[in-house]
Every structure is written in structure tokens, then in C-alpha cells.
Image 1 (tube, rainbow, N blue to C red):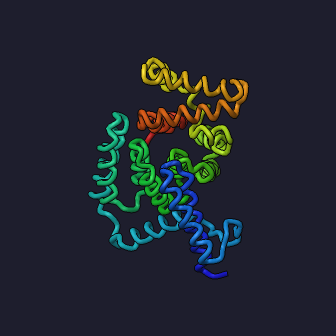
Image 2 (cartoon, rainbow, N blue to C red; image 1 turned 45 degrees about the vertical axis):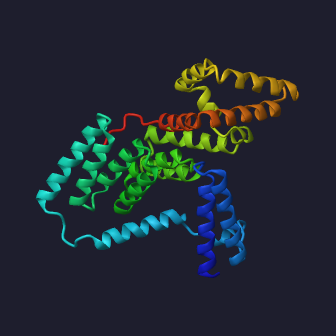
Image 3 (tube, rainbow, N blue to C red; image 1 turned 120 degrees about the vertical axis):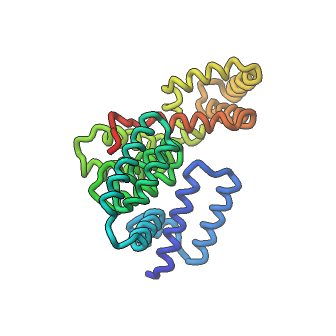
Length: 301
């Protein structure tokens, strides 16, 4: 088994994960698929060659390498007592900013604390929470990886990694991290709740109806903000003809009792809304992502 084939397989897995993230347009998805096909042809492998899979996803291997480089590049001497004290002050300032929802300021404080004490897992983990609040999920996962690399028994880092991965629609990875968090802290109700949410989202993501409509219908229907927004949208004179057209199309191809026709009409309606107001669907997705997780009574360390 050549190293090259295993590396190519890991790259293909990474590309496929990106294609399922929901963040790419049709042209970008097509480009990824071409890249995958080229790699499979060149290295004579396929997605069924699971024996080539590495123990960790390529992103984790990459982040661990970055962490190792950070550690290797760090000064050998430990931070001075003064630096440790100042870092703790900055961490506490960051925590206060988090409570006040000043997330940019929180990131700045945690970053300055990290500069003073590179080996404190709490600072990375807290910065990950701030990044997540800002929607910077890739940065959040990187900080969680660093925290875990410093302290593999730090359950909160696994939990926050799970939240960031869920927000990125990487549900299998999120489930794995929530389970790791629960191994370390079996009685944590927040981890249990978020694990159930990630598992439910994974089921919904694999549902033909959810995939066809392009978003999580269950979360939308039960989300008060969406209900309010939907009511506002329905009162829009530009949107009302689109809804009427959707209902007419559904009735014309078999009636509303024909679920496949209703789904098709719903897709057409969603596409028209997307064209008319491209920010609407993304706002809904971001709102649901930010509100769907159970943060419980979690406090920052």
C-alpha cells in the first residue's frame, strides 16, 4: 500500500467533505468533482477503497502538524509569573466581553493571552467560542485542535469542536467529538443535548425531502424567527405571486396530495426567492445554526 495512494485518498475525502458543506456553488462543486475524478484516475483508487483511509481526517492531520510547529517554535522557557498573571487578566477580560456579546474584543483579549502563555488550553478553547459566535467556524476548529493537543482530557474543547463542526454541517465529525466529550464528562447534559441535535441533523441531511428542499425543514417550522420572517415575506407583494404560482404548479401536476409535486414546486419557489433575495435563505440558515445548539449554562473558564 503506497503512501501516495493513502494521501490521495485522504485528499479525495477532504474534497468530498467540502462538496457536502453547503458553502459552494454549482460551478465550484463541479470543479471539485472533476478534481476527485482526476485523482481517482491518476492513482487508480476509488471511494470504495476504505482500507486506504487514514486514522484521522486530513484537516485534523494538518491542524496537528500546525500545532506541533507552534510548539516547536515556542520559546523553551516557561512564561514568567508576570506574563501568567497578565494572561489570566486578559482571559477574564475576554470572558466579560463574551458576556456582553462583544465577540471581536473577546477574540482580541484571548489572542493577547495566548501570546503571553502559548501552552494554556483554556485560552484557545475560549477563543474558539468567540470565533464561533462570529461565525468563524474554521478558526474555531483550529483553536479547539490546539486546546486538545495541549490537554487531551479537556472535555470542553471537544464539545466546542462539536458545535463548530455542526454549524459547518459536518455532522459525522461533530457526533464523534460530542461522544469524546461525553467519555470525559459523562454527566454533562449540554453534550448529551448537542449530540442528539447533531444526530438528528445527520438524519435530516440524509433525508431525500430535506436534501431536495436544501435546508432543514424541521428547524424552520419550529423556529419562531422563521415564522415571523415567513409572515413578513408572505405580505410582500412581490412574493405573493410566487406563492400563488407554486400552489398552481403543485395542483397542475397532480394536486397537493402528490408529495413529489409539492416538493418540486417548493424547490421552484425557493429558487425564485433565492434569485429575488439571495441573502434570505442564507440568513435563515445562519440563524438556525446559531440558535439550534444547546449552550446550556456553560461558563467560560
